[in-house]
Image (cartoon, rainbow, N blue to C red; front, side):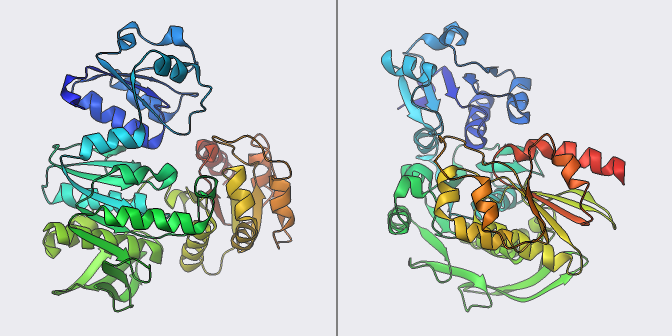
Length: 448
């Protein structure tokens, strides 16, 4: 496919975090861009500001007329869109070129030098750190991110087309569409079992991804894939050592295969973010960025929205917003909070994401959520799924070993939070819980 011959790009599910980055990319490169999504969000509003036409009703009549030419238009859709979608059906039946998000990302990056970050956890933060390092080192790269960078207020760091940074998503085996030169695998925990069926198939997919890497593969120490390794005090090829916390920041040294780098500093909480940083450092170093330039860039990295994002941070009250939606991720958040606030009570507010994920990891979810002092559950966010009989938040709540636990509607959430005396409040989940955070913040700020 020659993308230069395409004038119009239409997105079905344009508000998705990965979809919106590609829509922004095409608009920035002079294409005519439009799309559909179910609801208006901050992401869709940001696209409308740059003159991307978006509507919020699944209607063929609302598709702009210039996007109904199958010669000059390509269609990009997210696998999260249901097959009964009227617009998707229309384009398929009228011989349009219709591509999944992963396929168009593969097309965009196939002729570039591609740095890809894969893993069931950590890939968004790692790829965002890497994109920031390259930007600060004056490398003209374009980075497609799976979260909103606090530094750039965007999920796209725009640069040239010769070098790309991508988040390599394992969902739907999307990352197998990429052609990475340098890649990293952060983790291979069981997830997306609705797609893979079992953990073994997921691991096989990661091995297939590893086989596509042309130059250098970097893997978390202990994973069953051969490559340069990274870790913390694990005799890895890139090994963080002498880890300490000073004024809320992590400071550590890194032993690389060729040198010892002292006093790397990051303003991110949690040892999992030390690992993410070392992974990004290893990728940047293998690309050719000098350690001194990497260390300087890390000083100005401000994080990713909804990744341990402080919404209130005072002596008496802390409100944290995080995207965690898997037991491993929840444990990482709890570890970070307890490390930062060892003597304070913590209230967790969790919106489970997907019926299948809740069912597949019910006991692991119960164990990780039981580590809070108090817990409020919201109903399961279904995303692309229809309900599964017996799988609900009430079932999950019954397995959680806390005395102070409850289920709340979104409408009653503020009221129920205000009943708690906890000084640390953590809101977690990958559904629409993030849209409630500002309301919670405003009410808590008023009460305090």
